[in-house]
Length: 465
Ligand SMILES: [Zn+2]
Image 1 (tube, rainbow, N blue to C red):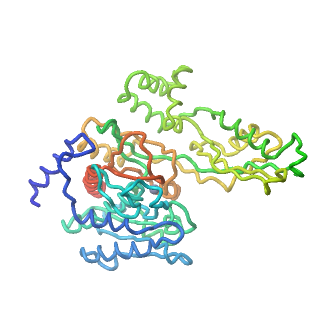
Image 2 (image 1 turned 45 degrees about the vertical axis):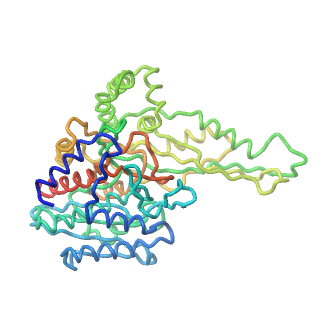
Image 3 (image 1 turned 180 degrees about the vertical axis):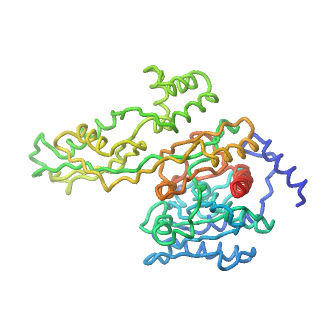
């Protein structure tokens, strides 16, 4: 394809506002081939083979002209299938490298749980979407990074800093987290001035680009056990005091509880910028909130939207339950898992105390492990400004919003280890659509290709900065 043709196609792509394009979008290679191979490789914990997938990517990079010395497949001891790939596009070395990080493991999915005609481990194009496990989380970015690196290599691009690609294992679960392993054992291979990772992305409202979210911070994952025990007995002679009732009452109190609202620098900026594009009363409420002037009614209206509520406060929710040992016995033990997402800076002891107060004296509350807190990346840094500039050149008028994500990513591990990390994909999905980890995960076809162009331009801009 010549350059003029390419630019024409790209601008035609960007101009489209509906999810379902009138004409089928041509499949750019090698992205499509890499993406479909990634989706077809069932990289689930524990049996999925990440190593096979990274070996295949390594072969593509060799074929594209990368030197053997610039490609490493790192397999941790005891995790033969948990391989990670590190590849390097060499620059002049004037500046410290840029790291592009994507995890290639996925949450499992069963064909019978998905809609007819879809197979989670076969990339399927339907009605303007690509369907498959990992098409958003996180194989889109993984495939895009590989395709873009191949393109930059073909163009003989000489950046001022090395561009390092890391495709890693066990972000979703398992005991061989690639980022943790690499930081501990191969720090120099991924050492960088800053990193681009998952955790951010664009949102559509009714098919129109509405906001570009850039993750600079994330909430902290911490689970608690709620446990109650009782002497038990024969169920034909019940007593009022009952382990299941005690636990159920504690969980009902938890269900009705809200932790205090605490805005931080990132969420305040987030609500302030969202206020400009959110319409009507919710926009006004956000503006008032950002100024600490929100009324009780305004707080209620923002809290009623689960996604916004998760930005306002620490949340804790019951996710698992087990109790009793026989149908005909009084329960001796009842236990629940309560999963919390702490605001950065929230004291775990405070949350533990609050939970114990809610649970009451008959239920014992115990935290599981210590939380992995991390400082936010700077939303006013030169890196953030470049992200905003590249986004604004592709999506004029769409605000670029620094975000604290409610979910956890490997970004916190990098931030904790001194590598500022920005979650941005340029991939737009409809506001409120959450299918990752669930059924019929999908990405709009045009969003994938626009994301590729965005990440290509962003990588170049950051590598030349
Ligand atoms: Zn992910």
